[in-house]
Image 1 (cartoon, helix red, strand yellow):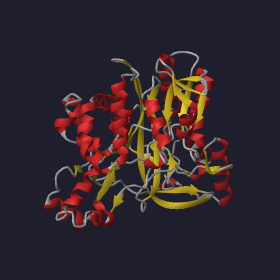
Image 2 (cartoon, one colour):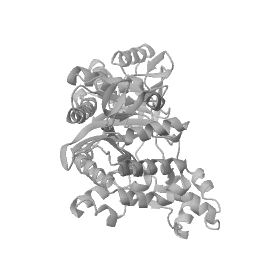
Image 3 (cartoon, helix red, strand yellow):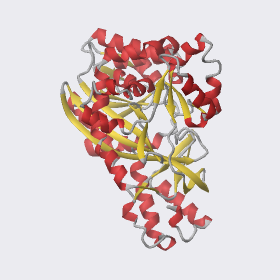
Image 4 (spheres, helix red, strand yellow):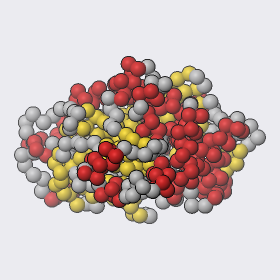
Length: 466
């Protein structure tokens, strides 16, 4: 979009636009009692409409695939077996899943609020999957606001751009409404006179994104939200005899996880006890423990195998989904000499990923070479590597944009990652809701490896459909 700008913003104009972002509520809390605008792009990023719409049309199929995968619990356990020997976090999650099913108190209502992340690969001219997030898929609230700011900028500063630039081509997203609707549907299926818990971190930088959903739940559905940490649940939560989750004398219909996706969210045994309490209760979990496990990188890698993928979807659908997969390898058996030679020759073309979310966990470039040092000759290293997967790096086209962080605007060559929200609600064997839930665009400097906004790597952006 910056290529179509014929007149540059002055500093005072940039600061006005950042003030407007704050007025729209596009904010974050970098430290206690301090608020600032969320890192954002000042202009939307162009994407081809044809490729976007093809991907959008597959949203419901991706939702259904991951729903079916999470039901195949024994297969999940088998695939994650080697990882559990190396990764205590995944091992604890699997143990909680087994405990929950042994107790037999699993809620039949399912709620999946997921985000399927892609980058537009130049060599293939296709969106290729980065990962499928089944837990704490953030920025559904604030992304529903940013596209409005971008439309305002292109409208009020129309003379600053080529005449053919159309503000209405900034793609709207109603992710906040769709996610809240999913939460409300699950809560109403559970019953009346109940509350929803947002399970959050003790200090939450991304507070404003969460409150968008909280307000929507109250204003549209009259459903109250309680914010609580895992430690809070350990202290104030218990199960009633019928399995209902009670928190401070209130019955909880849905627990919406915005925390719990990283080992450091469980600093003591109390947090693990709270997680088990939740997952063995009658409350609807978003995600439930099996859907959490289904979002593991190892599961993504296994689904890249046609014989696995076609267990869960019709081959005609599977071919369309697989068209958006990049090359993935597991470490179940030793990597071939040919692949190892390719990695050492071009390490920038590969990424090593652990079973983690939240950004900052992957190995890139020379980091890939280092972690695989002595891999062929050391069986201990081969065992250690079973907790990771290897991914062929996706190569999007760099685009120039104006990125702002902490009030400073910079002209930067950028890369963008597209997140497609999905909402699936089931009641027993009945699929109640299965819809595309809007989109999220995160943009980063082309020299940055990670792209998380809250993690400090990228900015929130929106799409200009060409």
